[in-house]
Image (cartoon, rainbow, N blue to C red):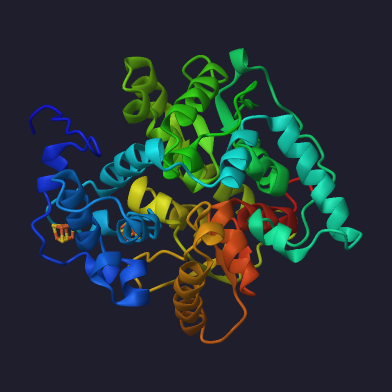
Length: 409
Ligand code: SF4
Ligand code: SF4
């Protein structure tokens, strides 16, 4: 590869742009192409659009916006591409360039800015939870926020934490996930502590900036990345139980382009990978639990940002194997349509993509109502909205550990 060659409209790296040879092998792996059959809504079509805009063959009109805005950024096309096209980098740079002249809607910008203020997120979430229980929160508001129908309104603090200076590992708790799924953090924390680790949470800096990157708000994402890095001093690994946040943190080296950010990114690891490296300890505790293990069967749904971006999805199998039997899907890790804020911004396409995923899961489970293991809060809530029983892999393990009596009830 040669050095970056900037152009005037989208500022795309020319080497990345010409890497696509238009073979079309990625098309069957693209959820928007499968849902619509439209070339413009495929990876190849979107790259053709980027080239046409770069060379000023077409202006950035509604058709171009539709092709680019409808991408889930699942990056399934990257896994499928034999030419190594880095589609995620192309799409992020394109959205960043377009956002300068055509920013996201005002309500999305306000919402994304609020994510950087954690007390505000927690307070707003509690108020929403109370309003839901009093039937004062309209359904459109819950849907617009991409929130679950019963947001928790009271959160117990995580316990047994140590200071960052004495930690063996950090547990990254994020923004919305800490408000809506702190129970997953608790399960992850207790399993990490059960391996003997001293665990800290970041002191400050909560939002990873992933949604800001997806929306083209690159400068806001960089500011959030700096806060997260400052909140995790030292060299201890940073364990993440949200696949989307983990992928964002692992990309800080690219986002910020500094040596410090590259070192930080190398410390980031998905919770399943971290626990899988200590699986002998967990499996041994389970085999010797007070009440004896009970097995169940679960279906694994890999979040795109774990499978196609972090490429760390196999560790989920290692983590779950001592506790449950596993059913695999046969769709090469196709997207479920959640995609960060995608289900809010593109509800019709997101629903069509989810329908296909739900059909795949129901077929694989032979119509039994099995738990669906998925390690990303967005996927979990989006699939639960469709009636599936979803659970984070660490919560499945923690549930079995509590049943067997070796983890606090
Ligand atoms: S990132 Fe996903 S939705 Fe976007 S073009 Fe690639 S496969 Fe399609
Ligand atoms: S992105 Fe890759 S797989 Fe898709 S058309 Fe281009 S070269 Fe082929």
